[in-house]
Amino acid sequence: MRVFVTGATGFVGSAVVQELIKAGHQVLGVARSDAGAKSLIAAGAQVHRGDLEDLDSLRSGAAASDGVIHTAFIHDFSKFKANCEIDERAIKALGNTLAGSDRPLIVTSGTALLAPGRLSTEENVRDPGASPFPRVSEEAAASVAARGVRVSVVRLPPTVHGDGDHGFVPILINIAREKGVSAYVGEGLNRWPAVHRLDAAHLYRLVLEKGAAAEPRYHAIAEEGVPFRDIAGVIGRRLNVPVVSQSPEEAAKHFGWFAHFAAIDCPASSARTRQLLGWHPTNTALIADLDREQYFKS
Image (tube, rainbow, N blue to C red):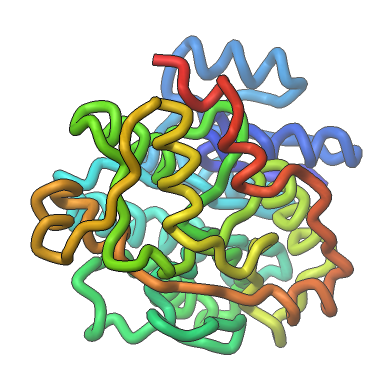
């Protein structure tokens, strides 16, 4: 297949590009810069210049492809609502271009806010009104599915880890380095699910090749729930700073805007995904991956 990939130079998207090319697919990857274009060419992909706000570019890329994988998102929490609106418009532009065809559209979402405090599954649907975070990727996907687009959603956990990680774990490391302590909330037993970026990339390919309209949601979950205290412990040991418990009030000051995520208990299952697609994660687990010098280079 000729696959159009947004976010093709990003942490997850670049792994998806490599996975697709290794499996014999052609990739048309979105690049915003000359450096991004060079990295795509080096990976063996074709370059499509544009960005998430250039809807004409997204439409033309989708029109020229046999399927679309949308991994791009602007991870700037200071403008989170605006970035969610950009994402929504991008998904609708991609989906509307594919309407009336059998070409697949794979959209990226997350598991963190699905069912706090209990194990979430592929069957769970997020209640937008119950969340303070306005990301509506799945709602946008559902709106284009209603127009006859074959849409699937890959839900990522809060911790997609591996070399090049610039997500939640590096945020925790930077906070611990700045504050001089690695903290957790209460007993630190709240759980984060996790997946290695290469395992996540493999799932995207399987959804592209085998995903069915009757099964629209898939979970890229290798570990159902890693206790937050274990993550904080590795960070404290690697940075040689104390590992401390904090009350919710103390944590709000320590973590700032990140306090909600530091305290959230959001275990997730991928049993249905594994059964349907034969997906079996094989890469390093979170704690072992985190316990490497690579994560702590300043």
